[in-house]
Length: 416
Image (cartoon, rainbow, N blue to C red):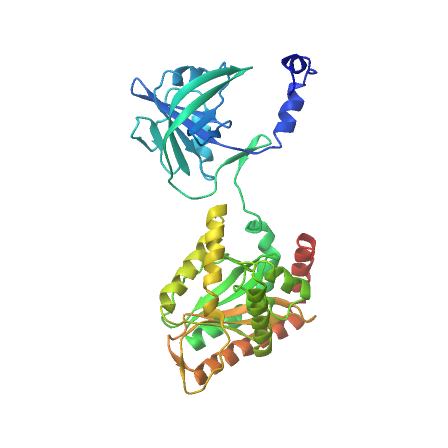
């Protein structure tokens, strides 16, 4: 064990270097709040940490010269408010010196008497236990009296002198500026998408890849009684079974990347998806069917996909999301269509290939009549395929410039 003498003999550290190096370690952003003489007080803290589970202890570390902490130190109860990624303005308000920080801020009093900030991710309610002086900071040890997750979204982070959010690995959305080439490419499909919506009296859309892990809805149209469900720019994850028509028949590395995201990691399940890809490639279309409580479960799937599109999934919600996708594989099973039997179709997706034979986008129709014969479903598939072939002809003719720009952007940003 290092002796105290060895510690005091350590070389002098340049403060600027200290800040620069430790600035490469992101920290969460919290606001410690308290009521002192019935006045709400708040202090932004990036040094909050869990300490012990038994007994439940946490700590935060204000500077010894902090005037705000000098006032907080007289409180009998604290609330540690974990800020959300979209609360940067609140963070700046609480970090600015002044006596009116809570003017216009929504909050309520906790059971132990400390201000709880509305819309924060989580709160830890605690009481001061011990104050330890440590160099130019105090370590304020607190006993946890209660805690809850109030809003399960991504937290606010402080990193290298700036504030930002958190994107779980593989779930990050691209910036809007990066979509220009992709959206320009899908202009070639607008006419066919509108035609499909009118002819089939449904929702029709064109989806294009914006990376190895996502598609986005680039254009949509509505016919009959179909309503807008999916917003333009909606992100759609390429996680089995979602995206099978975009992946089936693609390059081997694309297929293997998609299969690597199968959850749970069951070799037998991977082979089932591999077989399904071969079937979709042979048919030239991916079909989802409803069954049992299909409409309800299908809407749950749609709601989860829309939540994914917000980019606010926490790691815990991401795990729940992937588990939900695994449970929806029943919608994407192979079926032989018997012309006289009735089926309930969730959607039909057909790939569009570029002149080089690679899949550039997919056409999708949803909100089709709830029940149809096998012959009618086959007719729907043929209609969507006809539109896909028309788009392919456009790509071979006037869409080459847009295709070239899209491929240049995609290959530069996402080399496989």
